[in-house]
Length: 289
Image (cartoon, rainbow, N blue to C red; front, side, top):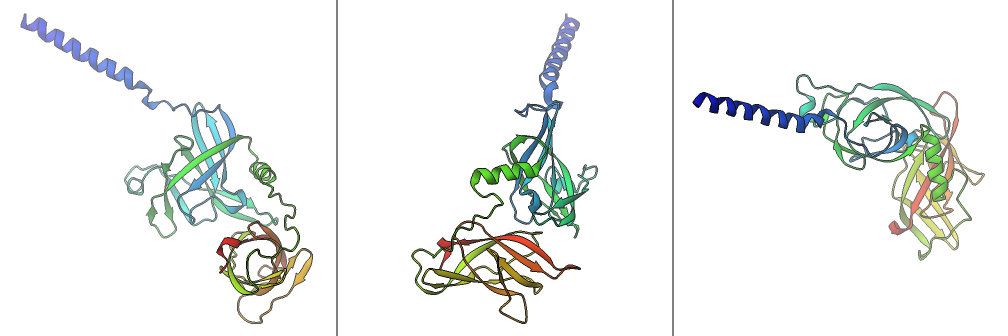
């Protein structure tokens, strides 16, 4: 009798274990990503401005979905991030941690300049949800970050998707400067305004806030670059020379529009030959003081 009960208990335990195993057998399978297998251009956003997709690709990467598993390839801004880890920095430093190794990618900027940077194939657990992605810099320190992959568009041409978004938003590469615009509700005289620079390799910057001078319907801005190697600027076909002789290059140029990207060209002598680079400057009217 006792032996029979023991056998029954063992049988029940084995059955219970088998049911649990069956219930969990799907744990190793990929979760349904919600999109079909294929290749997509997707947005890859991070929680830090120092860690992001290269400016040439404007937060875009190539998302591959195969057998329900998702991986996004992103080209970063330089070669200063040497490893990534899908998880926390603490776990990345443990024995046996499988680190993501870089690829060497060539990116092409809007002015035609090319550069070699590191890229990574990052596993994506789910779309539109934050997940942990730790990074290792050249100084040997791991940092925790969170990233999100979203807005997949079928295809593998990042620049075509970027161009389509610009056309949809009215920010196509063609000039949207418009006519010379006075700053509304700003008294004549000198003021300051926040200015954002985009374009080129992403290594140059301008001083912000910048000084603007309002006189009637005319507004000019004093633009100071982060380099002394700019020898002229072009705005709407008009060439402007530096107003200083020493230090970083400084120009006085017309402000053609506020709150929208204003296309300018700046010629740099920092390369082996002078090179004209296209940028945009955006003057934030709400920041005028």
